[in-house]
Length: 175
Ligand SMILES: [Zn+2]
Figure (cartoon, rainbow, N blue to C red):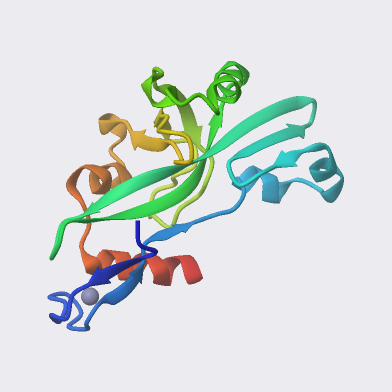
């Protein structure tokens, strides 16, 4: 997957600018909860590009990183990715750890969790119910919002987004 979305030379119908070379993947390198704990608690924790184990106030929280894909509907079929963190229970984390290097891991049953990253939407995204689909080793899991969430993010995942909207994401994340 290319790091940028090529875009189009045709002026945007919304803002009349030309959207080219848009950032394909935006997201965070740690769950929001990681940023909220003290330095001392981080020493007890574990953070890799894919997994975070965070002991906090007597409980251990488990997070994995995954991709929410939004199809780009025009002008060319393409895909934008939110790289985000999902909180899972201990049992799910054990399953993920056990099957991490399994070449057939994409065949395992989906898991569920809750979104642990706040994204720049009008409604909060943290806490949204997520279904986690493991993919082949080397690929981040695919994350799907349930269709009943009533959230803009869910609608964008189902219906797709325009190049203008992707340009907007980069602006919103920079704020
Ligand atoms: Zn535009």
